[in-house]
Length: 415
Image (tube, rainbow, N blue to C red; front, side):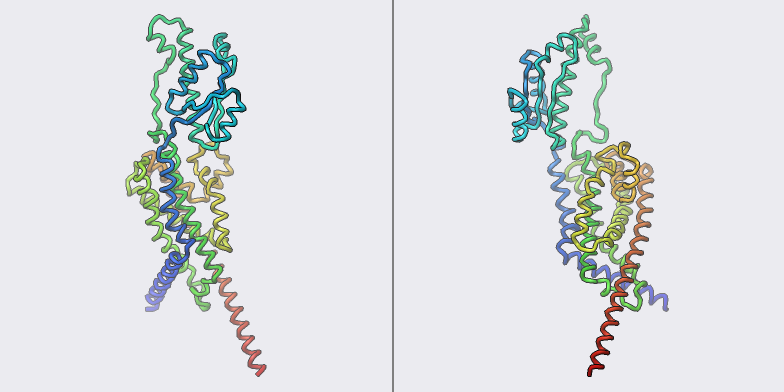
């Protein structure tokens, strides 16, 4: 009977804390923004911006100091490509730089005066390509167009100098090895399909940690732990607080997680090769790991605003450390070790391999196992730090109670 009563009491306290935390989520505008509005709106905005995947007809300026037939051919071929559009001709590079600084063009092609002379002398000629590096997509278009045109002109010159007798011999000399370029796991070769799957998983972690941090900062400012745990039995409520809060966050992010990793890719036609079963087995440890990680981070947050400064600052480094936007092999060993402590590192890698590359659960077993291990570690740390906070709250309450008793005795003595 005693065991049944204790179990019933624990369940009742857990759901009481869950109810209080759920009410706090929907009462606090900041938490509501990070838990609901940002996961709903931000992925739509980000995906819509990059929904075209690639850019075309990027305006460029040409500085042609050669004024020869070969230089004009180079300019015509660049203008005929789908990537760039020759919008201006400039007298010198100073004028070209002025056009770039005014954002009238995104790049410049500089053809030196000895361009055709060097080619006729069988020397290597050069073409200067100047790009606006603030936008990666336009930089890629400007640079790639110049590179492809230079390779095409080089093949034509090589064919003319080869003195071949048949058209077949000329084709073989220009392109000895026939190949077809097929973008692996990214059919369109676009930026959205390449980077957005990882960004969606990172959004889930960052918004969850931000929301938990704001809620914890509010609780610490209002000293709500004292309201939740009686002074007589503080340590018995540690698990109840952790489970109650985690249940609240999990219920909210079970919906947000499905929206981010299933609905948004379908809306914008990103590659989606995984079925719902592998995604479910991935999202379960990932969301739990992010929840307990957020609860641990929230314990170092003294004020509500601190967590925003911390997590927004590390968002871009965390994206690089996942190995999606920057090759994992090029990340230094120290920073790879740092990345292992974040759930996003393993969640992003597993999600991209499952959903974009068609991997199986066996292929991402390492990531799944590490997520479960991190979940257990962060759960243990969360219980420890929450217990310590409850201890501090109890000590503060006892000190206040002692002060109240002393004041009462002083008043009675004064009478």
